[in-house]
Image (cartoon, rainbow, N blue to C red; front, side):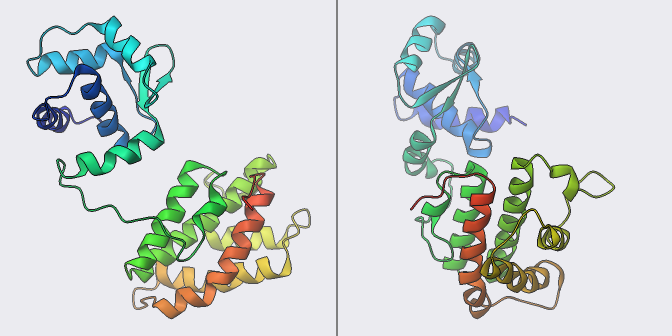
Length: 248
């Protein structure tokens, strides 16, 4: 849900930078896309926000033309705009200090190479980014839980691509948890996982269950290192099965 108070506080801070109407619009799109990369604003809505802060009446048509000519803005529907992912990343460092955001960690391939997932879904890339960063920061349980989420997602993507997603849902019409997903895909004669991929799933299942459900267990670096190679193998195989192009 849009928090107008926080948005106005942010825009007031941006005003201190003596920005133009176009730059204020780009900043507004950056702000709203932090929590939801798919969220968007209409040009007229942005102008209303600026006028509410005390700026003179905005020229909607002129701002709309400026946004059309700016590669950082992406058109959504007839009148909406959101920020291009590349532009959002480039503006992170500029505005992080204004919002007192934590320093952004660099991308790494500590557990899984992020390049392997570049042709998948954005939400899959974000999960991989988080699990790598959790490993880098020594947050082993967090890393294990995100690895678990990745495998669940990739198995679901595989069945959705085959238009068989109903097969991996329970009586509540919700997708099965990792245990059920592994059991189903492992017994599925139409999806023939390789031996190493099957072993990778089985090996990770133990660690994933402990980190997610055992309150007395804390994962350690060695636990992640032990399953890393198998996780890499099964991730690539599931990417292929889900129909994604895997980068060489």
